[in-house]
Length: 204
Image (tube, rainbow, N blue to C red; front, top):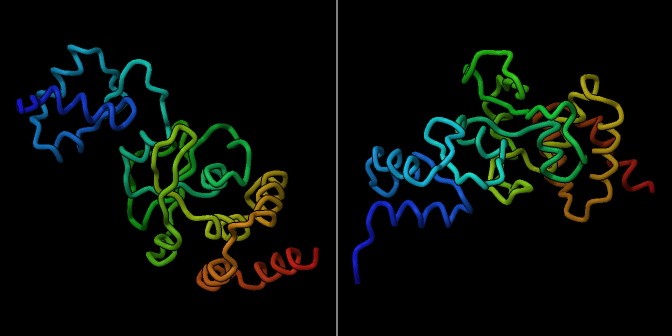
């Protein structure tokens, strides 16, 4: 069997990802970085970020690109609610993310991004999971219950309509995990507020 060339491997990676390739993919497959630049030039790949290339017809996924650029960021609040289908739209189209303590990945303000910082390692790491975007790419997000707890904790800073939409949709979810909701509420010191939410769920 004929050995695959670096170009063959790059083509396979792009096909596997559905149209994009990253510098990490190249490093993982021991392909020289210069080869990626050569391939991009020859086949007209579009550079979306440093080390992130895609075919011209690739449906641009802002969630995936931001996650690739800053892997420590976790999609949160409005963005997490949108990814979990708790709200239909993200206000102002800004992606909302949470960073760990002392992590400043870019200068603020940054167009299109709302950055929060969690000063506690325990709550920053609470409820992180992977989820598929609407374009079928995997990113890191706070799970359903952590997102609801974040909404409750930050209620005064959120739009009333979107808060109500998120909570109403959570109440109707068959996949909600009340045990996790209570665990997160305890960690975030919002137990009373979450018990009020639970009462409204079970009093229906």
